[in-house]
Image (cartoon, rainbow, N blue to C red; front, side, top):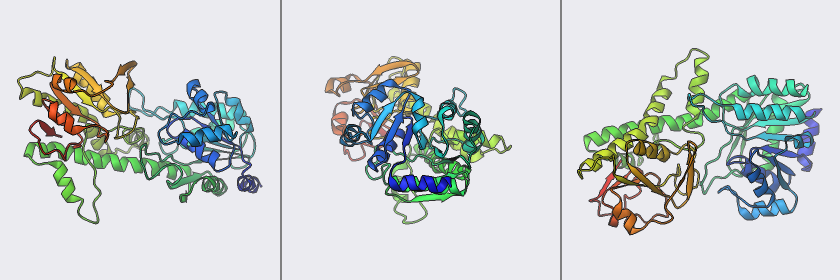
Amino acid sequence: MIKDKILDLIHKRTISVAVIGLGYVGLPLAVEKARAGFKTTGFDVQQKKVDMVNQGINYIGDVVQEDLASLVKNGMLRATSDFSFVKDCDFIAICVPTPLDEHQQPDITYVRDSVMEIAKYLKKDSIVVLESTTYPGTTEELVKPLLEEGSGLVCGEEFYLGFSPERVDPGNLLYKTKNTPKVVGGIGKDATEVIAAMYRAVLSSDVTEVSSPAVAEMEKILENTYRNVNIGLVNELAQLCHEMGISIWEVIDAAKTKPYGFQAFYPGPGLGGHCIPLDPYYLSWKAREYGFHTSMIESSMMINDRMPEYTVERASKILNRFRKALNGSKVLVLGVAYKQDIDDYRESPALKVIEILERQGAEVTYYDPWVAEYRYKGRAVQGLKELTKETLQESDLVMVTAAHSNVDYGFVQQHAKAIFDTKNVMKAIKNRDNIEVL
């Protein structure tokens, strides 16, 4: 049986592994599979990433440089930009981006193109697992037909297929790929069992088996929609609390003293990252196919999407108190990463804030100790190399949009004319005459 054959390969550590996409999800996964004793080949369309991996050079924060270099040197990990290597692989994990298009609808081009290439080389008795976050039904409605048509093989009889959502939290010091629990849903019980066995051989965490890929796909959407909705709630309450003269931050600190029934979420200038701002759009798009309107989810999306604009409105009002118009003012933005202490700026709300500020005539510069340069809508923007007293004094307004821990906020408070702290990162500073908090 195909199941028994693959389980034996997993047990003997002789199964050949492919990881398609060597980004924030794919490279850590490839490293862990190689560390577990499986010969692993990573694929990426960006030749620069391929070359760096083959030279043992790391470019992802959650990967240990020494681990990568050692695995490459020992022949356990390599990278390529030639899809034909799939013909020799038994286990293929797809970890490609699933962004939104210009109309805020799911763009599954990377998934579709990758699957079509895999199908050309897919061999019998192999396993394909989609890890990219997507709408429920993608694995069975899109991936399965493409693989069967392109390979001539029958799913469930000649190859296995399933979905196992990525769970990556860049910068998390406790949970990494190795120890984060996994969810697996295959097409058929045998596929689920085999895929789960593979992940159990690699990870130190629990692996939960569900009844279908659609359940696993929806589970992932639920994880991030849950956060989106709750962040939308506190963002809306932050606006109300400001009008009422109440600190939303103090309210949340008080509420989280309750030991049950409450989880703290915090406001900010918007949502960022590779999942939370995008996943609810995937769900609402798919829901329309069933004539269903996700009203609560879409309301939270509207609130969160508008936060960069609201942040700029608040900044303008701060400048007004100094008899300054936003047009022509010098604004220094502190932090363009989407969360603290990482170099990842995907979907960062700070970039949208900067865009709106510039559209309204502000002269914007930024400083981020983690991000020296960012690319946004076709242009590259360089950050300040250091945060100086002169830069702070010359700025009409300093906006804190990322709560990096390696910024001297006491120094900022001492020399800035006015500060708009959207992350409450300066809460410990006693002299607050020039600080306003979101």
